[in-house]
Length: 242
Image (cartoon, rainbow, N blue to C red; front, top):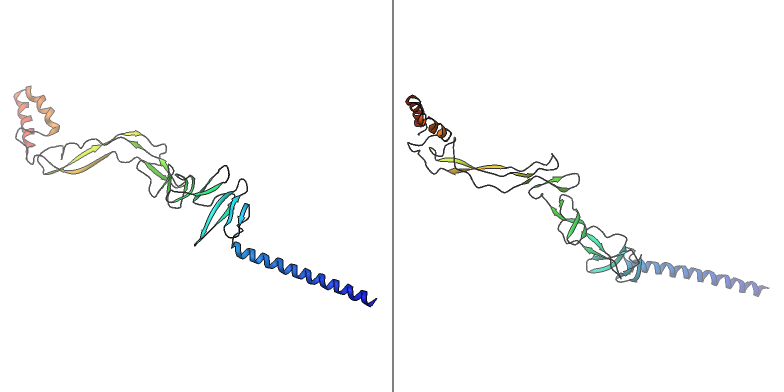
């Protein structure tokens, strides 16, 4: 009877020791697994995985993303690519590729951005710190809205001052352009359609026969009028001579 009890006690002790050893081995394997995989569960969602390089292929519908940490690179399988990357689906594997556009946060392809980084405006798949000419920034969507469309500048006009082309050393010359298309929103102003710049007059002194530009038509009008009216017009023309 005592022999049977002693045998049973040995069996129980062996089972307890074996269970304890198995538990220790299981904990040790998990610690080693966490140490070799790093901070990320890199083999989650993988169809092919390596302890050193992480995922090498993913389950269907997941994207393979190659993460870099210093000199190390390992793969992860993600449902969506991170910021600055876009998903490319293939027949054998889906990959996360980097956006090649400066200041882009999310892109549709390597050459077309869909969302810019903070402080930049989206315009035709590119990111701008300032919107191009003819477009205005829309702060609510951080995009460049369609603005006012204007034509080409005209040639510079005649250098004048006080409606005269002579009698002064300096004057102003002006050029203009026309509005081709008005902006769809009143909040987006049109650019300037006229601009002037300082110019040097061709003639500093007016000739005796020259009149004020605005009075030229009046001079021709009074040419065939009575003598008294011609004398009045002559005095007007003469007063314009500097």
